[in-house]
Image 1 (cartoon, one colour):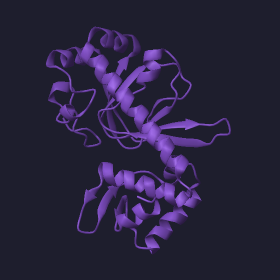
Image 2 (cartoon, one colour; image 1 turned 90 degrees about the horizontal axis):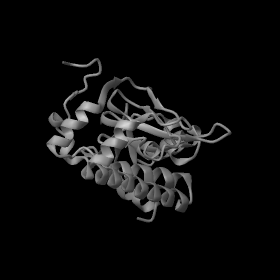
Image 3 (cartoon, rainbow, N blue to C red; image 1 turned 180 degrees about the vertical axis):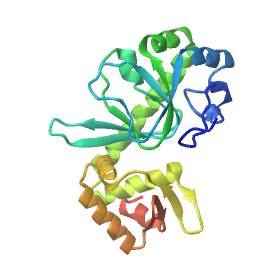
Length: 239
């Protein structure tokens, strides 16, 4: 059945066409069958708040389609996007396992399908399946390494232009599509959200994007950014 957001929804995890390439989801058939009995599948519009930083964990969300931004905020109200979660990621796992408050907030940035698993069911599922426990540990380790790379990247960057160049290069390497025009990036984030990813202001991001366009490093067409001169971005960070 088609959804209001044209998502290719799978209520049965065994029918998912991307499962094999995802760390957590690549499970044995009998384990997937048990997962299907404890999950609650939902379709969420853009801007849906899944959980809030500081809230006690109700359980985990498994991202099946779409993208989710994970944010943290200071007491002064400044927001930093710590990660854009992709398909196959388990959201809220560390808080749920530890029984401590969610350390970030999670909000969809496009229409998304997610499976929710209650905390007690998820902990029981982990304890009864070695492969699930190992896959969860692998994903948490990947998140830790990714966080370390982000901290190193932002910490060592000398200018905001360099930070933005690093972010664009990271998107090129992860999701870039090579075209005759250049490397195409589908960017659903606003300039404000991009600013929240690199710890600066919306005005600064707008100014740097304008500079990159004048220097013919990038070209913007709607929600698409075409990286025309990747070597110039690499030269900015000494790559």
